[in-house]
Image (cartoon, helix red, strand yellow):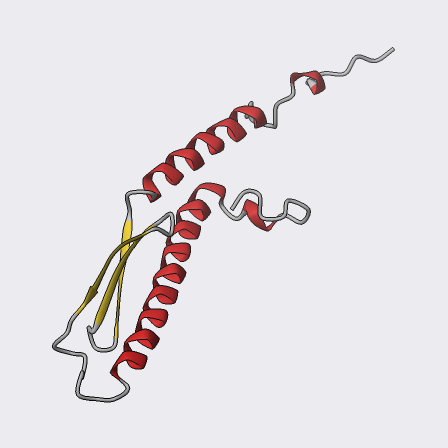
Length: 124
């Protein structure tokens, strides 16, 4: 009978001694830390030539809204409608930037693993 050399199938590791469970646990820790950091990271959006500025966190929480009354033409009959339109545009842009920031942080950790079919974006 021949003996097999180098067969270590029962070890649960990958070639090179890498433990997949340890890698997964590290990734989970890094993702949790990134999520925590995103709560404090912000992005700022300005629309209407600076008429409205919105600061939003990486958790999509609006931190502040500034309206520059000097830029809003209140003599225009449509000023209220214009202001409402600018607010909608600013909030939507802020949310999009915040989501992009969060996705970028997660991508750095997962390295594209979220694109694996069947995971439904579970990892990023």
